[in-house]
Image (cartoon, rainbow, N blue to C red; front, side, top):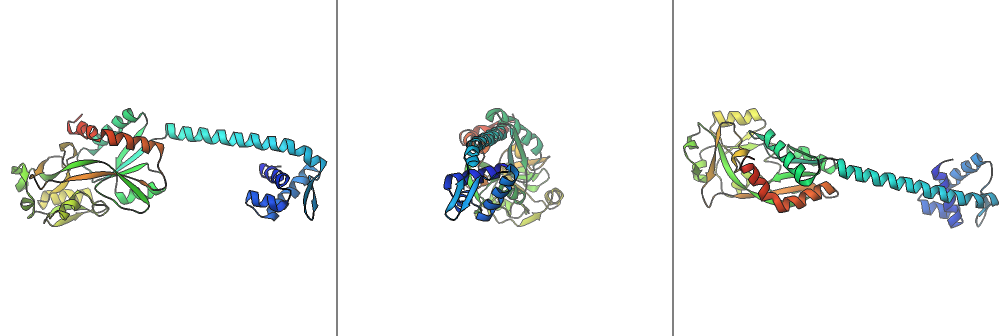
Amino acid sequence: MNIQQLRYFCAVMRTGTFSGAAREEGVSVQAVSKALAAFEEELGQQVFLRKSKGAIPTTFGKQLHEYAEVALGAFDQVSAFAEEQRSRSSEAHDTLSILLAVPSFNNHHAVCLGLERFLSRQLNMDVSFGLCFGTEAIPRLLAHELDVLITVGEYENPLCDTVMIGTLPTGVFVSCDHPLAVKDVVTKEDLAPYPVCYAVGLDDFNKTIVNHYFDAGLASKPVYVHAQEDFDAAIVQDNAYAVGVGMPNFSSLPNGKMLNLAPGESLTVPVLGVTARDYKSERYRAFERFMHKEFSRLMSTFTLGA
């Protein structure tokens, strides 16, 4: 005897026919008939008399029905209780998983750890924060393994939703030996003779900072970098530069310098939270609410090096 046989039995009792029970349970008439035949064989007695116009419960069937309904009710209560506890446990104890789609920068391990600790305290939940290539994160978003992907710059995908959670200033990062390192403020004209790093897998994923500057008339030739060693070689050997978040703590270089863009040429870029269109965890919703209110304070924390 199994729970599905009890469901079919009670469905026939309610509808009066095998076909009615089949429609109610979303299965074939044959499936109901076969299950109840096995049910009666196990019980050793008939529960229905099969008639041309329906199924007539036997005396035994009528008596059994009272116990079957109680058993089904108890089973459903157990299932509902288990599901509720599973959901509560998942929301209460699972980690808020965040990935940031930007190139690795000099002290990104310390920054990510600081963000984890800060957000964990503010949101009262465990937080995991790391860097990634955007193309790696989207499959995880769509599989509901990741709560949110953060992009610096716009991203479009029909399977995803995006929400702006803030904006960031931008800056130019050069090596200390770069000809422009003697300056504190540069113009796009100053930058034009030098190549700009273009991270394959990131800058071709969304409208990142460098893409914003290209749209604004930046004339530098892009040098395509695929890995950290490519970036280091371009910066050191080719006098290339990188554009990024205009905060010293987010510097791309361990021994480099951040330059500001001249007034009127400096851009701010949006920071977006990207989620799967069909999935928004409660963890993410708490994070989104917090970021809408506290994004500026969060960024100032890392500007000050706290």
